[in-house]
Length: 335
Image 1 (tube, one colour):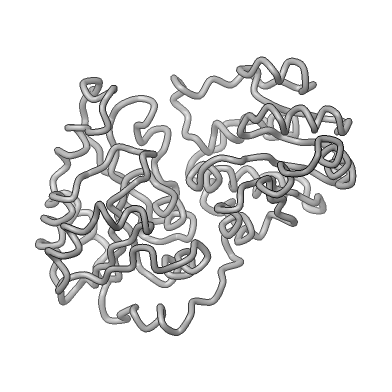
Image 2 (cartoon, helix red, strand yellow):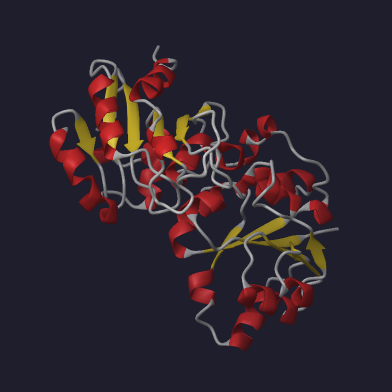
């Protein structure tokens, strides 16, 4: 009987979001099990918002320990198993040294053949499965024995521990309009739609029906200045003004988001908000792998093969999605 489980995912926000359904699945299969989640500082708010995670382990802190301290720390958790959802050499090594009985990882990392005792044959790049389904395959040795349909995924996110929104941000929400977050940048994690397209969409959106917010990080802001200045009378600029925890709360109060394949898009879908993703049809970044999965999640993508932009940050295919198409999707949700 499994009592304690460690799940390790120390990469980006969107990847962590798409791992949470696996956490929910484990709680469904083992209701009394305690789940530890190893993650990074900047993903801590979303991990701690998941009701299925019992304890967050900050790898940015633990990685600063001396090697033997790291081993003793993992030993103290008395874990029966660890699943390396994101391969990390150092974590795999200390899990082995900590003598965790069941150590699961992908067979596609050479060091897992030394440090794991259950290696799952998992090739992501050319798979037709969604990232959430691929993550779940790593839990096959723990009873996740089938490919779970995407329709079954939304109830497994467990994003219920949302910090109450503060009064200042709550006051920005208009209960009489559709509160739409536009998130133009992706920090390099995805091909982008472009500021011109976002600008054209802002012009098309009826102001009596939509209240428009532009979101992004402080770093994003310098790239967004042309858009922010051009439409300063039509939008609310919230770039760089909220912590991740506060931004999650704001998304939870808003009605929807339109963005490329980014963490905020997946947060919105996990919260059951309207989440419209903008995608390139190019593998492995296509929506079949990375689409938002939620009760009101959709995506826009050209129905064509796309390889011309493989070695470029720009993508003609995603930029060819028209603002009119985006407006049409959004209009479906206007009461």
